[in-house]
Length: 466
Ligand SMILES: [Zn+2]
Image (cartoon, rainbow, N blue to C red; front, side, top):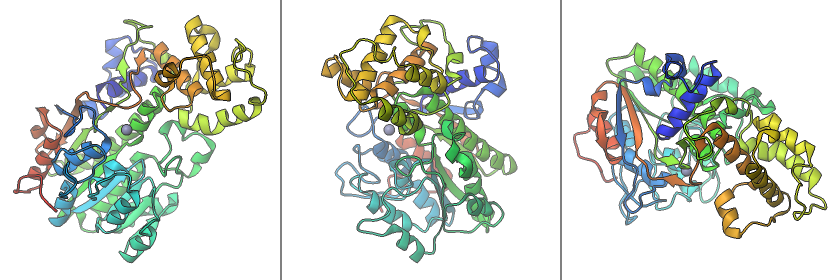
């Protein structure tokens, strides 16, 4: 999440609320702004790691959780992978504060892991989850555990360590009024890779028993501030992890949906802050930018058309697993990619693009139609008449027709993408509350951990060896 994701979301909210994203007066209305961008203190942090301008999420999280730059893929250790370091969450816990870790992706994923684990490789998710079960932290919540079994049965270890795992909406919401320590609250609907669903998908049929990231955050705050937590204090890390996944896939609306969900979680933290303004600090930032998202595109120049995003009602992920899977199964037999108008002649596909994405085929230019035809060929039968390198650039590792639909929809709104990976731009930092002034300026991502450690009273300089 960098400034493009923030500006795109505020432009979308402006159109959603009946305003015009071409008008500053509309963009500036408080109701069209995110909680985070209205916070009083803003700064900016670098995102590069020890050996790459473009970081991965393991090394960036290690930087702002433990205060040390490392290699991509490494969590809570130095770049030689020999020394392990304490995170600010562990340091807070050692000082008697309660600790919670929340993510919309799995709890053993890179960012949450950096707040409790030290491993040479983020792919050792079972090892990470085992370390999670041994933390003694009071609350984990959001996504599930991607690798619960392997050398350790994490469910058994959690139970042995006094944790209760809850995965129904009712039992999780019960924590709001009956908080207990050592609880793992897993969202009932896990969509992909043990992650919560994209926020844009929660109107879909499976959504009945779903909690938003904001609702999980509310539960986390109630658990951590209950049972004496107001006296001890607490540290809570909340990650909107699928903002990154949506940007990898170059899906602006899935990104914006999760940006809003994450910002609503920020709103929950702000509510707590308003009740406890003298001793609460909130810091909001991104670990890096993903996708090279930008505000503007070669096809739209100086004009934005965010109204064109308003009719997308499904993420690339949900569409691929459902509507697309059904369409592909019904149309794949005897498919011939050398025919010139496979897509144009398929009224079902033209209707699907209109109904699910708001992409009206008849409004597209010839080049956009050609790109859709090539992508449809590739998705339907695995072949088209493009060069291999052309396909790599156009689709990355994503389903060709779906990433082409979002590319064209997004470019028509004036949203551009340059990568399917992380990019190296610095990212904004917003802060409010106790000692928030420390977050003004331009600084390194390791300084996030160092500033937080100082504010919670750690006198030793970071990084601190485990
Ligand atoms: Zn990523």
